[in-house]
Image (cartoon, rainbow, N blue to C red; front, side, top):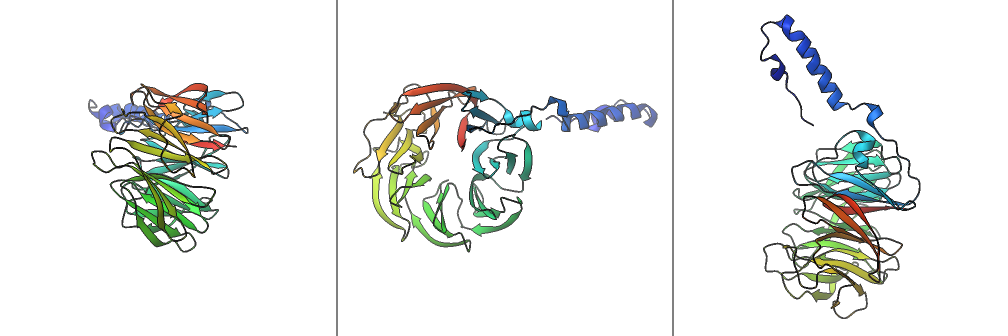
Length: 367
């Protein structure tokens, strides 16, 4: 929103009496711009299954948006946050977290988190004064963690009252998080190589482990093994690796090494039964041999050689696997125009395609 300043109206005024009408016009325009008429808002009420897609938008452009796919109608709804609230989402919609009746939207470069109703998309709350929020991990009804790209502390907040309640000092930045028993495992992605183990009852770091450079995602399989995927980093000679860790004693049990530093594997996911992992293999340049989506049984002795979904000339950007074993895959195209969402079966058969917003990045599945 462009804010007009009073001096723009007063510059040509010769005395106060002449200026008053212009001041009143300015005040009226200001409140109209900052408080959009309720008649312009759209009322939603989706109580059936659906999928939220956060569209990052371009860095510093403030053009992030939220899309919603109604799985009953197989229909995509665009800009639902703006349509339901009357306000722009902000600068870089990094991630989505669904918990209870809420969707938490981390707006990375705006340093805030929006909370909206998962069915009506109406505004509920806003968490501010964050450095660069990345992901949210809800621990219970009284505690949730926020990772951060630049801060060396994890922020703790209450997901029911939305009040910030504390911090956890990692002496490192933080990225993806996952729960196992009474512990949270946290990756140190940006120019880092650590995996942290946090006691969620005391909020104390109990252990850490060095893994391959830039761990970006992690999952727990049916055997209670922790898988950590590292991309190797941009402009770096480090080889990407997939590491299996015993979460009990933080010992590395196996490491799978990718063929070269040109690869940038990311978005590690797992099916509902916990016996097959999936990841997206791309590169920092957008071009890599055999790029695409790969599937791998957890008892495999080697990385898969062939993709189940080939990237070809597309620019695959993000991926996730739903509980219904549907692969959700996005194409950022050129990072300027609206992207595309593809839905595939796990055998690689395409189900359908939808247009989404600019740089579609994360998903939240509402069941």
